[in-house]
Length: 197
Image 1 (cartoon, one colour):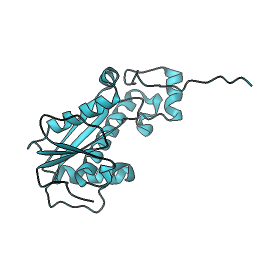
Image 2 (tube, rainbow, N blue to C red):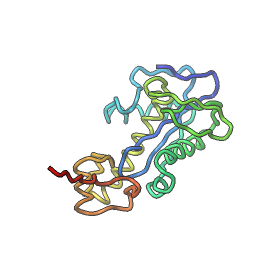
Image 3 (cartoon, rainbow, N blue to C red):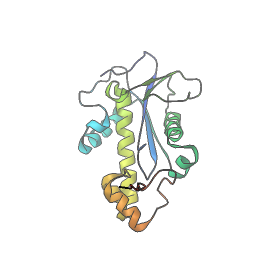
Image 4 (cartoon, rainbow, N blue to C red):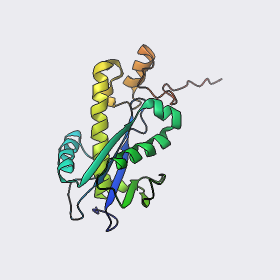
């Protein structure tokens, strides 16, 4: 796992919640000191909730700068999930001080932010510490957001499924309908196909 890709002031950025039926897409951006290393820090999906929580504390203490941003369902429906994910990353990067001189992006799609050069990295959250840290911050922040929403709308099971399309979540949609936090442009319930035998 590398600390960074260049010798410039570099941030890593990643998002969480792209495949969810409800809630925001959340992104984070992190600038680490060039000498930083950590044996446990990796893609947030490979960590336990407890590990992510502990790592978040360290990331926030050690990082030179970090930013976190949500893009809400109404905006996702307006511009589509890919563009909303990129917008969330831009908003997170915007919060960084100092501004990065180079941006490392997890995945293969991004649009330029200002005139700062960037590079997309497939599975970057398993290759670069700054992207891995961004994935941890985005995931933990979004999980907390969904737990708060769960306290207001408990019948969708957002405290456990975090808005992803589980059986419990879809059962809640069938029973209680669509909430203001659902992404209306997504297929919230699977369409049943009819077969003639």
